[in-house]
Length: 570
Image (cartoon, rainbow, N blue to C red):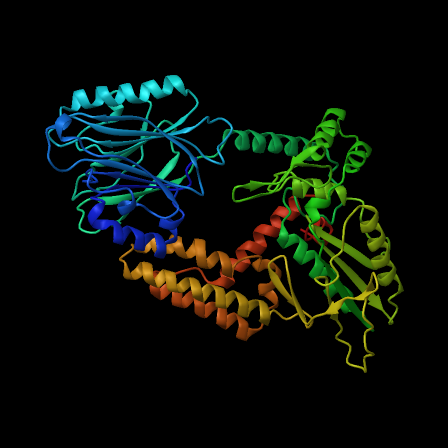
């Protein structure tokens, strides 16, 4: 599939300098796979070198005055980007008084398995042409190639004037839905796959009165679609077979659980512990090196221990082993090797398989908690009377578990927060040692999208949120200046600004200082003035989300926080 295609309706000779400049200065033009030109006005006196583009192969079909009866106008050209495809061939050229057509067959370096080739047809139909005759000729051209290449992808683009390819090929789909010359849509792009491209207008090229058309791909290979669907089915089946109380502090891939629950559970355990005398907490945020790439086939044994169906276990084993992998750089491809560890990149199942691999990695001491969200693992040590023995043993045991399960701890990126609010003289906290290296202690860390600080304030988190939201307000102002209606501005605010301000709001807003709240509310007030309508305050949003979250937890007896709530006496 072409990553990007541009359809031009302009003379080439007079606009080459402009086109070359665009290829240098505009990334979309530089990375484009195909340029299609109609009405090139090229003749035999103009050489390929004069209209060549660096890194692109030119195929042209100049107008023949003896066949068309015209002395000027017409002509077609197709440029193919060499980094996308080198195997190209002109399969036909047609030049009649009614239609000009240039057909090029391509076999690019990468092509979805269900497609055998890409066939590009550049078309020019003059305003005075016999449309019926022109469509019959174009039908014959495309039908011939469809017979020879039934699995090919077809692009038929150019200046159709008043003609429509759907009159002879109704299964082809037209993608251009905007005017390309004045108020008329004359430049059309047809393909044999629905919704394969999204068309967008570009500026006029030089003095041309036609707008260029940029096509960006929307097609998703069928093999990838089928693969993802199968993975989702397997994932749903595995989740339905798992016991409800399996690894209760793993919050990923569970109904009614989210990052919000992982954060609030962590904060609740720390705050509850710090209420006692002579206590403090040490929190270790673990970073794994390429976590999903270390999933080992021994996972299947764990699935069997969970009474998983044998067919599912065999499917997962086959999924994880005997995969062929190679590396491609430009035109060079390495030899293949067999991979028996890790999950394929971008795999739907990866987080679930990793969470199942680590389901037995739980705290062995009651004063510790291991809280997980997929591959994000946090060890919370609740320490009293300076006794860190249980915490340090927990970390040592976790290190051994990781080593036995092929997981590599990245000590350089693993960080620790120490939360100690004792007013008396506090001793220096000795660093934690993992594999001979000291873990770095930090004053704040970003945990599942929320900044946690050693003083348990959320000033750092508020500052980060405010900064990001204010950047989005600039876009809101631009849209207001462009005359977007209030309803649309409100929708944009909710999707791009409010979503930032309210992310995991139930876990941090209640503990914000008054100064921090004023900063956040200032953003909402500014957005309200830009939009021109009242917007919900963060306090109201926080209260509503808290009530909604509590109601959802109260109905779920398997939720880790269910025991924290009880009915009031009637």
